[in-house]
Length: 66
Image 1 (spheres, rainbow, N blue to C red):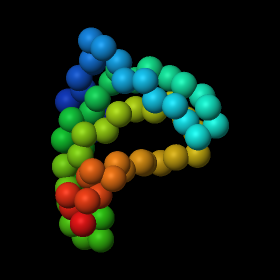
Image 2: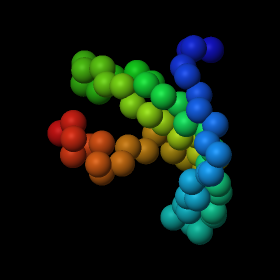
Image 3: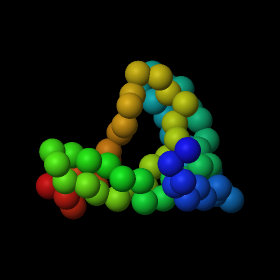
Image 4: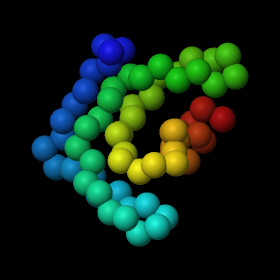
């Protein structure tokens, strides 16, 4: 719906939730707009099937953008 480029990875990324549920993620959404306190950033997002989370930002991204 948002016309965001999607890459399907040849080799998936294995992600484990805090409850021990493991999934392999293969979809990567490139350059998604994310607004935080009035500033718009472009982020690459991976679609996770876990419920209870809207968005998880990694420490690397948070450190880079303060």
